Structure formats: structure tokens, C-alpha cells
Length: 91
Image (cartoon, rainbow, N blue to C red; front, side, top):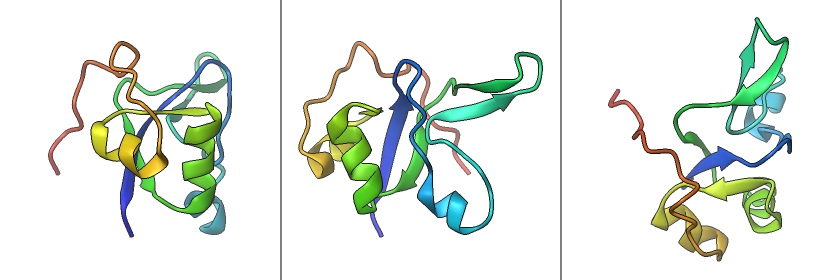
């Protein structure tokens, strides 16, 4: 399955459905911050599957495409000013 690279938008919590199906509560583009006690935006783009629910979240503005490929899959324009400056770490 294709992958999407996304960033969190504002205070929207877009569910990561693959994680939910595995029994983990997770929101795309966010991480848990134990000091603040909530879900905060990640410093780097998040990589999630290109399933319909995730594509819809990008189209509706709950997530933002972090690269051209994601923007093309989702049928949106890339907002380069909002994309994080960091690139994902090589695994």
C-alpha cells in the first residue's frame, strides 16, 4: 500500500486507523507529550498508509501533505510554507 507523509494541522486530531486496528490509540502527525499531558505535533512529517480515511483527512484539512507525492495522491496542493523543515530519518 502507498504511504502518505503528513503533518498535523492546528488542534485537529486525525486518527491513525492502522494503529487503532492494532490496539494503539494514535493520531497521525502527533506524539504524546508526557510533560504537557496530551498529543502535540511531531517535529518531522509522519508516515501513514494511504487508506481512504487518511486521504480524506488530508482533503478535509485535518492533516496536511508534507510532500508532492502525498499531495498528488490526495488531490490537494502542497503548502510548502507549512511543511516541517526536517526530513525523515533514514532507517
